[in-house]
Length: 137
Length: 132
Image (cartoon, rainbow over all chains, first blue to last red):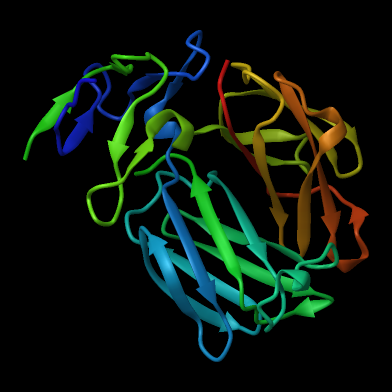
């Protein structure tokens, strides 16, 4: 086993692009494109507060069931992809996740994105799990 | 601070496996390849299914209201990979498990709590797993 010690990785031809050999050894993927650029686990019960996060500067409580996630280091554009899961309930059990619960991204900006936690109406939820993929600025 | 400049990374013992120290205690390692998502996209079903931005996404095929096939550029090694699907406001998303293949996967977006299929303005999905 060889160990390389470094603090920073930068592409040679393009600083923001490094190829990585894939699991099957026949294809490469891209390191930067594959990294999650921002993720957060937060609650909206009592107060809107993050439990843990990466590249999130703050959360803003818009109104019941709606939250803005403010990004620390901005994205390059507002066309990024992401995921958001919510239990749309104040309870914690996994049984509170059900097909009737929905959540989505309300809007995208380079420096923020908005969630709504919805179950017939917007609901403050105990579990809100989200991350985004795309081009960092 | 040290900076490594390179265009490509591959493992020494196995080209397809690189470990990186990532634990909070600076001891535990994770795997670079396994931790990378292999595909992501955002598209607008209300604009002829235009892909706004993507990675490793060849195309999106309209399979019916709320149903879209995501075709990969570089295939996955098997059909056991993990997929996230998320839609616009008040929508939920899920994978169509009957359609998952190494080259593509089906997605479905449902509207609000009725569960009726609907076309998303912001249709997002990503795939994690083993690249071919």
